[in-house]
Length: 200
Image (tube, rainbow, N blue to C red; front, top):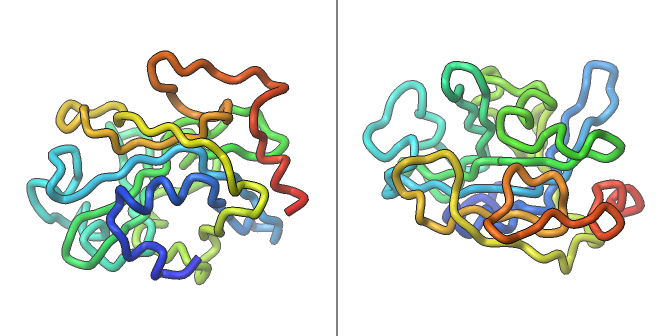
């Protein structure tokens, strides 16, 4: 994916990232990959954003150029993986909330902390480009994903800005971290699976 894709506001990029792939080249040369099925957007003028109050060494990447990973530690325990968007000197990014991996348990990366753990991502990956120059990158949606239905709803785990509808997820996926009220998990025979991507 080119950097230009990420040079747009987070709330525009976030739904477009659902269906894209997160890919990691492992030590033995094999590729670990999954399809992004849930994202959240954050912007500097949003009280839930890390860059809302001030710029610091910890959130500096979020103010940097778009198309880079911003990885932070949540509650001193879990790593959370974001992608910087929009423009430099303006805190703006998309949190990757859930990824579905082929031939793995459907909820192995259903949440930001689980996602980071499965892909082995931590603060060492902060500020690295997502465009393929490193051993972790993002790849575009496949043609088989074209007409999938996304749910737009509110974000999770925040006290301020909780009513902003800046979370998107793939309705037909069973790997979403938390579904909107009233939206039931699809039965296995009717759900979308990342194994469908293998032929693309």
